[in-house]
Image (cartoon, rainbow, N blue to C red; front, side):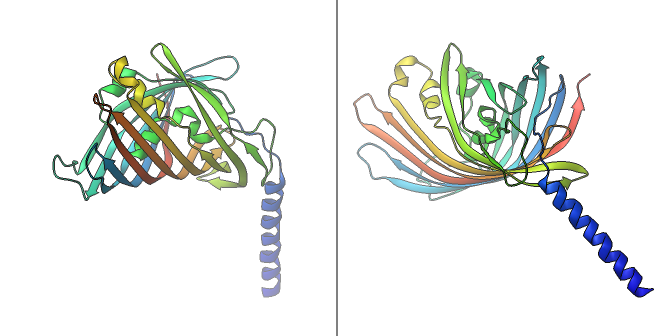
Length: 307
């Protein structure tokens, strides 16, 4: 009797292993799906730290470090979907971050907590995740104080859908594909072009909270969005006196619900280097450099249909 029981257990284990192995070898077609007026709410646990070096004209450079962590909510509303499945999406980001700074020079200090007021980005995205148009309200950006790297990266998510571009053809576990793309970013009457470069790989097919998910790893270079700094100057004459360069890399892991075409979880870590240069009326330069890293754990908390 005992021997039969053990044989049954071994047989069941063999069936499970065989099923999982077969599933990993099957090809799947990966697509995002959108429903008009659908609202998706995600919660993010974010953290970041950076070292900032400031060099005022004619003075010695000073350095200080910053750390930030907290919870951020991002809300996506599917405004409309055309006959080809391309969705117009409005994404709004808000939240609170605890902030810590060490080594700041004398003068105004940074607050211990930062409230991120709601700010929106609008974009169009097709079922593969290719973004064709990004719009932000430039006045809304100008009237807000700068935010730490983790939040600014999330605000720019619409530029590349976090670098997640799905493959054209069905793929199986271990297959990889290119996620490089160019995106037009529209500010008032001007259009800026940014380029995202990266690679993706299907690493597993697994269940997550009763959802059959494709697990995708992505590594990407962040687009240099430095020219946005000069465009945000309140008057055109100031734009030519502001220079900025942003460099960075991200590594992400996404869980995509295959049936619903919906991202249900992601983990992202990255590094960002920022260099800002301001020319004074006398021709001298003020330089600020920041080297930092950030982490973001995202999970889907609610999907609802707007009435």
